[in-house]
Image 1 (cartoon, protein in one colour):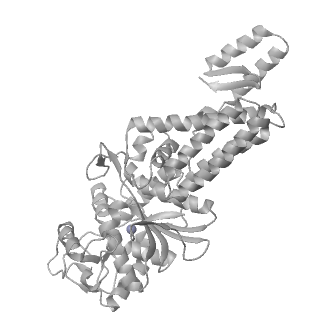
Image 2 (cartoon, protein in one colour):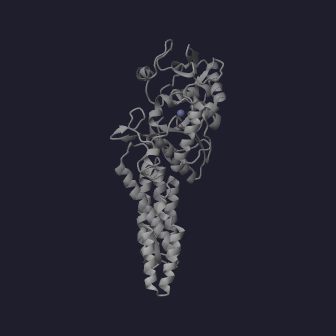
Image 3 (cartoon, helix red, strand yellow):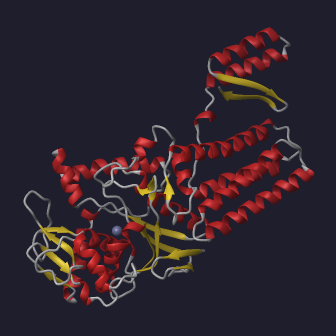
Length: 468
Ligand SMILES: [Zn+2]
């Protein structure tokens, strides 16, 4: 598999440190609110990457953290008159509601920063022993000028970074370089704090991720992921601290997803142009949101609009209908043993779709083209289902669609599949009436079924029921 590596700026063949095993980290949510569509993109992207690596036979050890202490957490908790940890508990719970809905698998490790305090303090100690940090009145700072490789991820020179970063990090008096950043912030009145050798306080955001990486995955990992807005300063600083403290390379592949935009502008909390998943799910089911997100390549900006979500919904329904139709025909038990040409065509299409899917996913996780492969197979299944196909070939085609959707973590929409028990019974009574040539009774039952919101259609394979 090839992955685009931000560190080298090349699509590179993926070679894990340990054969057959992948260690992967992705920066998780800051749990002070519901997450929005822009936040969801990395969760879905790296979940899909993990699923695909597993599909290709790797054992994947995946860590995605919860940032549960920072300025945003403290401010929101104060606004709501609750503690920071109560706020974190609330929104971690809400994260799981949406993440489960989006079929984001629980990662191997899901640490909270506040539960990793020992590892954070150990890492700062290591930096301190090697002379990379210094203490000011408000905290402990990392000295970027001590690090000759600083800037290697964002591909900027130190003076450029400092020119750009100076404003971003409100310059504190005494900082040796404008780009120096706090690894530990001394406590302020009313803020939660932990004890440390430098004084009571709380960690900086960057050191949390470095420490959780080290604690759960070790000094060097295979893949580090996140949104492209995290390249600088967050990931640059993670690399700097980890490599300075551990004396080893931090992550071999840096994978970054592009933004979700609205009218060409980045969807973000600070711009106010965001939609939470909880809002969107009032109009579109979770599986459609996931399918929409994967319809674009992760390194390309994806524009959010109702029209595009509707298109994704129609597309997913089309796939779902093909699968349901195949299921119905297979269940009828009336298919031939040998489908001749129809079989040959479908078996070939099934094989080709499976191979093309892998080829596209191997090419830097090209989910957009991988979805086209599923569509092509859907068309072939539909054509075969209306012809002389055998049960074996149709089942294979149908199963391949489900297999490939599963790799993408996309579920089929459910509701139209749920025929209530009551309706199933009426359909049976009607079939019996017809068998007894009691057509008046059969028609009466058909009307009754229609009144209850379902249609029943007679097909060569038996009655087919659909929601009206
Ligand atoms: Zn991080």
